[in-house]
Image 1 (tube, rainbow, N blue to C red):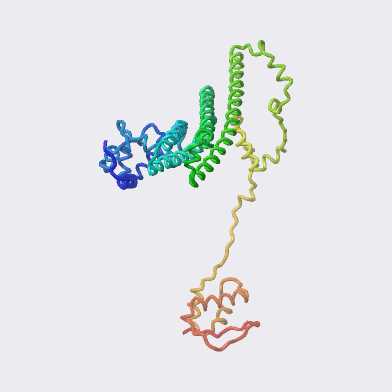
Image 2 (image 1 turned 60 degrees about the vertical axis):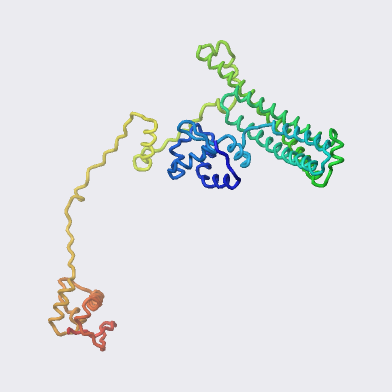
Length: 399
């Protein structure tokens, strides 16, 4: 297995294959991540996947790939999506603080003493962050367990195990608070006290106090969840017993269920009310919308009753008689040809033209306007005007 020679090489590798690593992290809970799909993400360059495997960033199991535990844990902690509650980290840092305090008190060299003091400060900062994160992870795990675990026995066991984790975290928080208060290492905190250490201690005490309040709320939540599980499991057990007696046809003889149901006045046990609404038959036969509604209801109820359309009466002979209506249409082309063959002005020609039917004065005016608009290129329109029945018109002659 290869190791990265520098931070630059590590960051460059992670950045270059960020698409594949992002997919692996998002699908870390899946049982399989196919090698062929990973090959597609790296543009079918198998050397890139081989490099990740060589540097232990990715592990291969048959035809499947997964992130190495070290990088997976790193990504989960940085992104704060870790579901594992590891209280041993707090205990390790507490022991680390105690050891470095001893080394500090026994060391005479100021440079090395400062190195031990830095280790103490670093461990104190880590304890506060780890404690808060463990409390958040504990609360999330409790909610997920209660809401998503289908098996009641496993759900109860998991919640009890998480409650033990809560007790352990609470005890470690008290142990840390007792340590930084100077009750155990009074000499160290008097000798090594400086401004930065005091700020770290104050911040750590605030973080520990916040963790205590959250753990109290978590304890109440666990108790509530356990009581609800106990109630739900009791209800399910009773339902199972009732189901067994019902299957054995002994429910009425061995229980007082009939008396209990007679005394129960809940709405769910009341019969469904039926409101009759009689629609007049004439309205149903005459209204098409009413017929469509009846057909939909009949189809939903799957009744075998077939609706019969009422027969209409016979059609009257008057509607069967053939009636012809004739209308004479005016052909403007014929009128134009007749006008071009003559010499009279257009309006007088139209007024005296035989259209085959009686044409009113208004219709003549309309025909006059239509002729000019359609055949103006074949007419000579003069600047002189004439009047007939209060209508003034231009004098138009054939070209």
